[in-house]
Length: 326
Image (tube, rainbow, N blue to C red; front, side):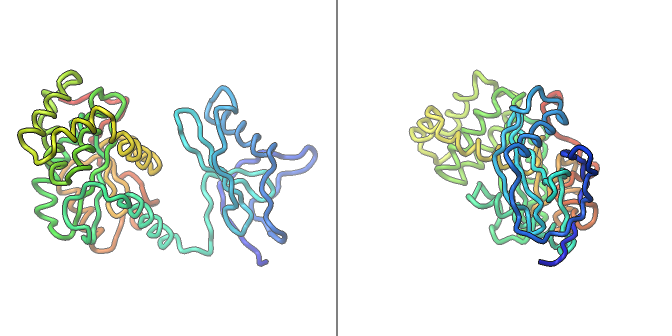
């Protein structure tokens, strides 16, 4: 086996008494062997201290695998509030890193492949889509029906982005109801119930929820949406109500939330343009510029750092610590 060099930002974890910590550059000359149970527990204990957690038991190992042929070991833990942490343990088991860079791989090509992988996952189960599925630019929106900034984005997409970008762009919708909004999750499940019957009617329910944002409450949501479905859509109202009453769309909303969280979504609206993440949108001009760049083959990752980086200036968003706007 040849010499493999990897760059890591590392910390010494398991130094043996009387022996210095080994260098992060390692020559691998034998088959990779995974860390012992004790070493895995040591990583969990370190993560607990690093994250100011009470006990190492707060971090559960959910995946353990060889990261590459350099014998760095990938460990994935689930921490408090289902927070996922991925770390890499060095071959000599003394260093821990949150990133692993392979010098044999072109970083720009690696980022582009990652962006494509993200977008493939986000479109895999055919979420509600506006525009052509064959458009060169795919926008995936993670949204909360009770968030005023998501309502603003709806207007930007409807009135300016889709008309101006035309066949170059498609927009897919994903639910990301925030815990601070009391009727956002029930609304998301109602919209998902509509999508299960008919995509066209989904967009009607989608528009109704955003357009009625100021008058909807936890108490009147169910009746107002039911009345709208009966009077203004082609949905079967009996089937729709059965879906709502039995929470048949809960799995869809839960999957959307998990997909967003896995890809760094923490606020709404968050959009992914060809796999690159942007939080909040201030104007159609900004979003159209991002779309035009993606259509021309450029991305935020090739210009401003890692993929999924939050674009500067895109600050209008709802998050759990933020007040609701009027």
